[in-house]
Structure formats: C-alpha cells, structure tokens
Length: 327
Image (cartoon, rainbow, N blue to C red; front, side, top):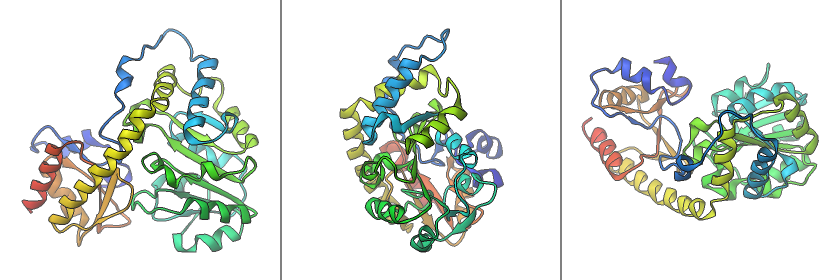
C-alpha cells in the first residue's frame, strides 16, 4: 500500500493489485483537471529539430502575461517537481522549513528541512532563512491570503518559496501579481494540473532576475521539449477556454461536495480540483473503492484522510456516489 501514499497516479499498480476490479478504472488519485485543454492534439511538432530558443522565449512571454509578471522573471521548467528538486542548489539561506502537511517533495527539496505548522508561519518568516509552502495547499486545500503572504515576506530577511501548482483554478490566491521585482520570493507554477495535460511535463519558476538566471544556468539550453513549448503557448493564450474552465471547475466542485456530503463525507479544502475527506480509517475506504475500480489517494502520515480528485463527468460522479453508498 505504501506506493499509493507517496504520490497519486499509480494506476497500473492498482490494476495489478486489484485485478478483479471493474473496468474502466476511475482515477481520482491526482488533482489533475479531468477536462483537458483540447488544443494539444492539433498542434504540429517537428520532432527532428531541437527546441527553438525563440519559441522558448515566446512561451515564457505568454506564461508571464498569464501570471501577471515580466518575462525576464519567468523560467520554463520540465515540471514543478524538477523545480522543487533544484531548490537545494540555489544557495537559499538556512534554516529551511516547510509547511506540513503539504506536498511530500517539499520535505525532500533540501538536504535538511524542518516541518512547521501553518499556524506558526508568521513567526517562522520573521526568523529569516527559507520557508517553503503550497498555496493552495496540497493535500488539504487550505488557502493562504496572497497579500498577507507578500506582506510578511517583505518584512522578512529570508526567502519565501510558494508552490502554486494548483493556483490556476483560483487566480486570486497567487502572490505573483503583488511582488516587486526584487522581492525575496520564488514561485513555482504547474502547467499540467489546470490544463489537464500532466504528461507534457511543463512548469515555471517566477522570481528575481538573479535567481531566474541561476535556474537557467542549471537547466541548460533545452529545458523543455518542443511539444511542451508549442502546447504551452497555445494554452496560455486561450483566454476564453481559461475563463470558462475556471467557472466550470467551481460548478463541478460544488456538485462533488454535494455528493460527498450526501454520503456522510464532509469535504475539506477550497481548491476545486480535489477534496480531502476525514474518516475513521482512510485506508479502509481506499481499499473498498479500489475494489470497485476507483483509485484515490491515502496518506501514511494521516491515516484518517483520503484525497479524491474531481470526477470528470456526471457518470463518474454517479459511479463514485454509488460506490460510497455500497459501503
């Protein structure tokens, strides 16, 4: 069971372990948007050529406009997971702390990092060093007020790193539009989660130009693929789809909450892409749902929790509701 508590998306492992489960499987183990941006299939890529530097710059301009910052403060990454793994080599000041509960990789991003409770965040920022958190938080969906985060970061002598992998659905939570050019804040953004294209492996770092230059040096000449560049440009400039999707996710999350509540599961969290439910035994429900071909996300450090990603259709939501009722 340990593999499922580490990251979501281990569908092939579940299919082997629960070979008799009905098919097709319903994968709710991640917080990836089930309604993917539809333009990717029509984008042509010349796989014979190296990624073009001019197109990479165009991608970073498109992303910067979407994030609300300047292109020179944006660096494309092959996913935010890689961005987190690069943090330890950027010379950020110690002591390093990460808010917990949070994304598991936050505790592994530095050689030594101490877990802190979010209620201690103000005091920890005042102490300097480096603090890493997610907004919205993963897995519990907690939201930090963007302006308050920026205010406390500006008053600190240290660095704040904000993982905004799930911020696209709720743009008001992003600190990026509120940051001065020299603010000691580094932000990580994910492409695949909101646009529903996790396999593209695209993310971004936003920060002061010296820090962005250090990241570029570590990544080298071709940080992302030609496909990621072209898909990213098209998606970030599709303002109509983005606005409509944000509205749709809010509506879908409300319907999701209603089904969970109807079956005695009080949903936790404010990010529309996923919910946590607290139970007497989260792993028991994980097992029961897996036997019905529904994959969710349990947690070894919080055995009462189960995280469920947003179902992608009325039929998927009804299937989940029936599985919960069958208990």
